[in-house]
Length: 597
Ligand code: FHN
Image (cartoon, rainbow, N blue to C red; front, top):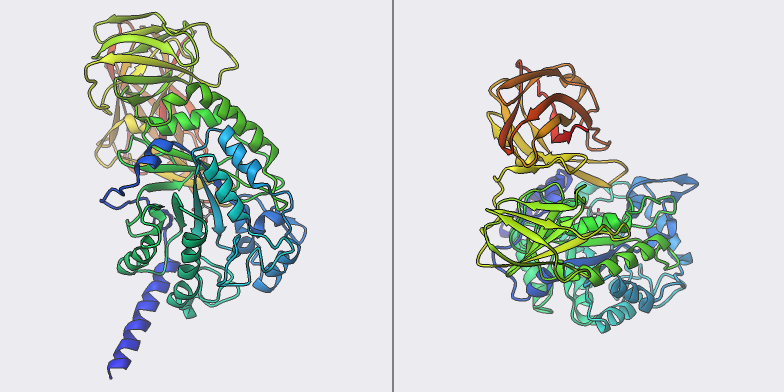
């Protein structure tokens, strides 16, 4: 009787797990909550700021192509995208021979790039182990002509350079195992026994990884599933005993990780306290695809790093080596350029926390005690950097890697810095403001600065104050398969009681065009809306762009709604709302203030 009820309970638990696993949303797969208890070893991670992610597996050899057909987007998903049966996929191991792999070269690249930690895929969803595992023969030592364990060498080469080393491990999805998550083309998901898979593969393999490769900075779990919170707790506890100092990513699930990872390629809209990380691909795919050449430029990488650091987080940027073990040429080249910038400007990134200067058209800021680092991502035309609301006493201003002292003026709370002549080759100038006393914490409600010294001033959705049913939220979509994008937009404005108000701090009087940057599906096209500024109402009709679907680009239009003259500097509210009632007006990404030339 007792064993029957146990079996029933187990069957119930399994069917609930199956349901849960199949109905997971992206937010559940990207669990971005972390434990309330700070990990005692979190310090190095908070200071590190720049990590290298490496996706490398059997999929790297396929390079985005299967049976003459090319696949785009996430190359490591090719087995799933092409529904390749295990029998055919596993044969690829017989010719996987990454003889170009050179641990020293990879680690040297990381060091040259200014990378402080590296996380590499030990086993991705395909189920192939890139390390020597006694748990399975489907691993690089047993199943390939290469026969060596590249992870041993890489762990040594990185550590020797003072770079923290960690493993990515897909703890739930394993398309090779009958009881692993999410291979629905070879197996019936409803018949799977996830516990069996956890007990016989995931846990023993994680134990191998945490025993045989020295101290691991991070175990980077991904796409949780099949375990309750209690079971996840037990799973974590068992592993922690082996290496109490290792940090676990939040994708271990149920809010039990040591730091937060946001969605793939996502930066939170506002600064976040505590330890967290943004993860980005260098091109479109995580795993190598030979026809993916959309590499972020050195300037784009530096700006991304500054953006993430200005909100208090780390950037972990992915590279995808090919099946021979070679890192793409442009990844090498552009990362080395980034490293040169960091060699000069690293003080503003490493060990910093989020910036205290509110939104400015010239860029973003990062902080250290007594210092604000101003990252000039857009240079003002007149070379004068204006920082309103800077209440502390400024002692000096300098440029990292440049003049030790630059001229500045303080008029009340407005700090004005005279930038030295521009250096076009510089990927981003950083001004250091040394100050005495205390600056107040960042005020997200502070008015957004608008200046005539820029071609355009972007006021992001997050700075609007919503009213009625209006909400500001992040919309997630992709261009190619799995290359996620996130845009924070004002949504839900349906009738005239709904509105969004932006407070603009106009620094230079003059004529400005007011442009709304929005996305508008067919059902919202031709709706009437109104914009209020300086006691004037301007009416407009929405223009159709694209539907909001997960698997296609979300298109935005820049629609000029009004031209206005601000005759004196000061704070001006701008209000947008639907004129009638019915459907959502549009999804507003930003308000753009463009000085009239
Ligand atoms: O499905 C994976 C994907 O292949 C890749 O590994 C990324 C990296 O964050 N994580 C998962 C999706 O979010």
